[in-house]
Length: 526
Image 1 (tube, rainbow, N blue to C red):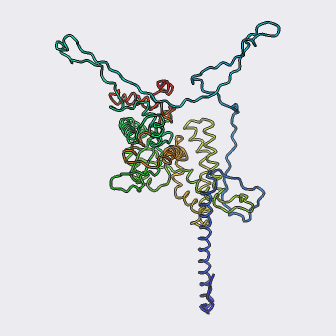
Image 2: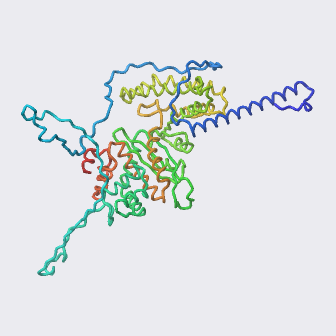
Image 3: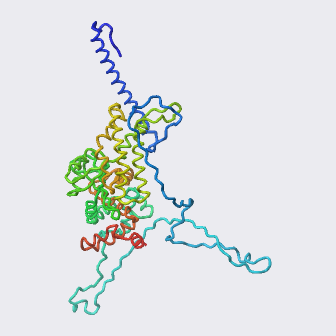
């Protein structure tokens, strides 16, 4: 505090007021300093520290310097006996039995097959050692030859039909293109499943003696995506027919958008839903992050929607017939930031447990119940009853803990923000205990958006809105195929071969991943 003695009043009450104001100002400044130091430590951890959110246990020998206020402590989860299981044998996994095998026999010379006693040695067994080999991909040209026929005698004058007869042209997925369905599937999977940009694929083809420009490859991808749109509509319908839709979004830079600069952010949205035996993942490109994007997708859907706490989802939460779920992973992450940003003890040891650790213990207990339910393969009704009996009391206790600590914590600090976040979204965070089909977090959508994010690091941007829409189409087909047990290349090649032959929506429905046997689809590729 800095007080000029010459300006001090003679009245003791006025002097007390000045001192109180200075003390309050000092407290505010100190809180601001503590907040800035906390943010610096968090930033340094983000740049140089571990990205994992796994908690490190504090030093058990370190006593607490200050006692915490008396607030409800986390309730431990009751120990549950789990039946024993057979431990898997460690070591190298056997090579797949369906891979083709080439046998090379290493035999001893004939003169060594005779014993010293004069008798001939007999074969009593063998030692087999399997090695995995790889043959680089090979390009080939398939020539479609259609013989022409004509009458040499009358030159077609006496025939009412055409003068020259020839077989009808082969049905092609992309007419007048040199690409087969297998090549198209390879290009698509290489980019959207393996993160290999088209310009790199262009160089790979060039090394194999084939000149294919990026423009040609991009044109193939866009044309192929347009022919798959009916399948996308069926997948959207399937998601809207499920009880729960998980939503997430991630930035995307798109060039040549009408009326927008090339540096403006666009977004790729992902919607996950369906039933356990009909899992669907749909990606959708949208120029903005507005809440209108998920509203347009949902249409007249009524049911549960789960997402993070981004303000754009408030429009979804206000929609009639929608019950909005929060995400416990996001709530937990705020408390983990407190743990990452706090000061270390001398020698770099982890400090003793604080309020953030107590909050994490509550959340750990909640997820312990979820893990036990998965291990026991409980039905949806059994999960509901388990949550009512076990999770609900922990949640009620946690709510009391948050309310008790909220007024004791600086609101601008990381801990204050974490507590405030949990309280602000509490009603959405506890919705999951209402139905056994629901999950406590939005990990389904966050895991679904990850392949797009990893691919974006490689190809950086989409050259035009058409390219962004094509990306959404093939991310949808590939991730939905994977979610239903299909190998992406085999599935795409299969539907590329069948799409030119479809005649109606029933034929499109037969190409949905859950209507196809993965073994049959993979066998058709060979």
